[in-house]
Amino acid sequence: MNLHHELSSQTKNLDTILVLDFGSQYTQLIARRIRELDVFSLILPWDISKDKIIALNPKGIILSGGPESVTQKNTPRIPEIIFDLDIPILGICYGMQTLAEQFGGQVTSSKTKEFGHASIKIEQTSILFEELNSGTSLDVWMSHGDHVSTLPDNFNLIASTPSAPIAAMEHSNMPIYALQFHPEVSHTEEGNTIIKNFVFKICQCNAQWKMSNLIDQRILDIKQKVGDQKVLLGLSGGVDSSVTAMLLDRAIGKNLICMFVDNGLLRKNEAEDVESLFKEKLDLNLLVIDAKKIFHRHLRGISDPEQKRKVIGRTFIDIFDNESAKLKDEINFLAQGTIYPDVIESSESESKEARVIKSHHNVGGLPDDMKMELVEPLRDLFKDEVRKMGAELGLPLEMLQRHPFPGPGLGVRILGEITPEKVTTLQNADAIFIEELIKANLYHEVSQAFCAYLPVKSVGVVGDERRYADVIAIRAVETVDFMTATWAKLPYEFLAHVSNRIVNEIEEISRVVYDISSKPPATIEWE
Ligand code: XMP
Image (cartoon, rainbow, N blue to C red; front, side, top):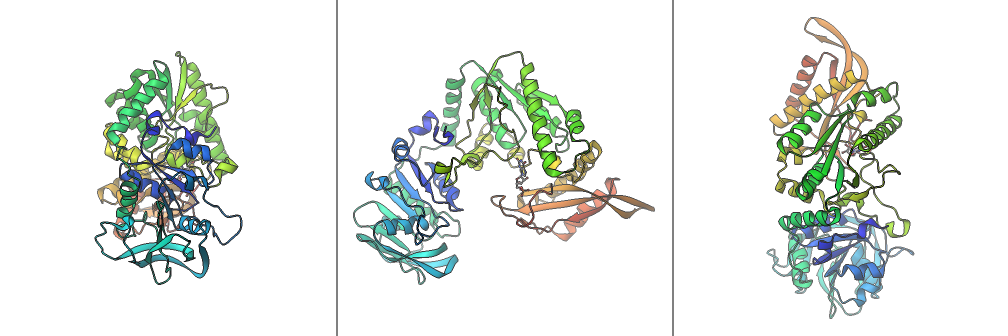
């Protein structure tokens, strides 16, 4: 089953821009830019079948960039079918090069790759460049090794740069356009105007992708699918499962059963906070399972990081399974907060059936004997759309804008054996760090911040006493996609203050260090 193509009944009828993915790091950004214009956009692998393209009935197709070179054999090509559909096409970077090659032009590999800013000169008027405030030159973002060296027949040059004389082109009688630079990247001056021109002027899309409509539509969808049957949701307190809970609550009320498992590896007061928000304040049907003892018993004596992850994952599934079996009601559906980046297929996935599954070990998948149908109302939404939806559904902003927290929780932040005492120490240190970040208005300046527990004894002097105790590492990173990250340059005075508080207030700690490793080579978590 290709889950990707299961569009909700409503999105099927929306004006859609299809983004064919040739593997660029910016592909998701293209779709997000279009959705920011309130137009629905979907990413599919470049080798998608003809039938699927036709079934989607897109108003326009964007061909993304990609890491390959069209000068090499067996590299991706545009499915010829799209040229017969008479749908507007916009090729970006690799998308432009393969367009050029498939229409008989020439692409040349440059000795030097061009990454970064370039100034392009607009050579000829084009709908794509209408209403640019900057006149006939634009500062754009380039990221390429190859360039189009000879225009294909029937294509006109519309823009150039000194290093890429054919920086943009358009077909003389078909709605086909191509750019060597990346309009989706914020460094491209007026990139949004170019995308807008394509989406509205060339593809004639209507702006139908609105959050308020979307919520009503999703609620209707859920009602239709579920009727008066019961739905079980594993609520973690994270953004995705919380927004899923709110949406289902609006659709089916008490027929939604939320299950929150306290695994004893959560942030300080997390279980209490989740209970007070969802049960007391929002009046959701919430079961809190206190499984701290079971998790800690299973984790006793284990220090290997992979082993710890496995035990945490397995224990979660066992408990979820057992607890749901205890429910008196018959449960027919399992809801999950899967979001779009979790399911976007890689460019080769159509052939290889590869799929990125929701970050590693969160819910771990369904036990085989749980015969429940999945409800995943956020499956086609980007994170910022999920946050927006959460805000409209009444979730507090602090919870929607919280840093990510890994599924195995503090289990990946305590090195060596995990004990309840170490968890408490780490929770206290982490709470100090986060509290201070918020106070200093630095929390939203970094993408993720936390403490890790290092079971390394070191000597310290606190007051008149020598203290031989463990170490806390402070970690704060800046990142866009969590695939790469740089350590945050937090002010020294701030770090000194946090360090003082931790050592003074937490007896079990004698020393604090700041992690100055970027990713790669280090990972964000310590494990
Ligand atoms: P690493 O440590 O791999 O982390 O650089 C990248 C991002 O992923 C988060 N992370 C996880 N998230 N389940 C999750 O839901 C996990 O098992 C897991 N492991 C790491 C990490 O917090 C960071 O944001």
